[in-house]
Length: 160
Image (cartoon, rainbow, N blue to C red; front, side, top):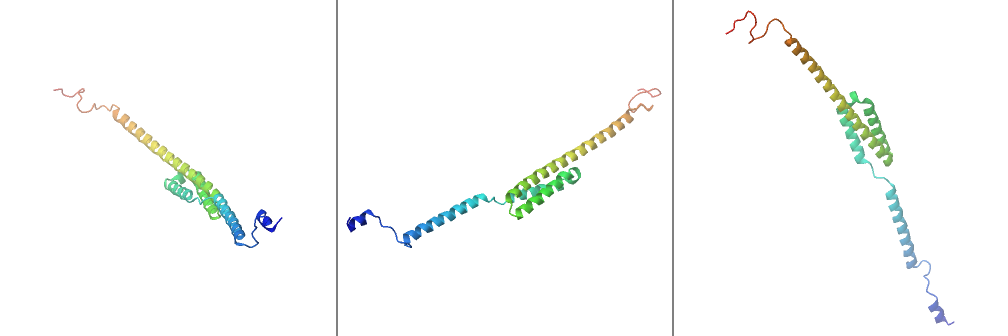
């Protein structure tokens, strides 16, 4: 085979350290880094800021609604779970923080609902007591006392 034939049949291979080879390696490295960043970005959970704010707000509302009086255990559990959520979030455990915050919000809601129910029961009991008092007063006023009342004619009264 002639030198020309060998040159045509054998494609030219780049020399080591040439620009084309180096560009290919850099492109592969960049692609690997981009893939790692994308996979790493998907794996990390976003911070549960909204969940923490919601849970904190609901716990505060439960405290204001007298939940301590009507649902102390539920309110304490909500406080504990909110504290756990804040601790987990500080440690970078966003998934755990989110779960704790959601539980805290649910328990705070429950405490508020029980407080509202307790207050409603107290109000109903006060209304019952007032009704009983009124009934007693009406019964006492309706009892005959010997005085038939104004406008009625009884024995010994002049009739027109």
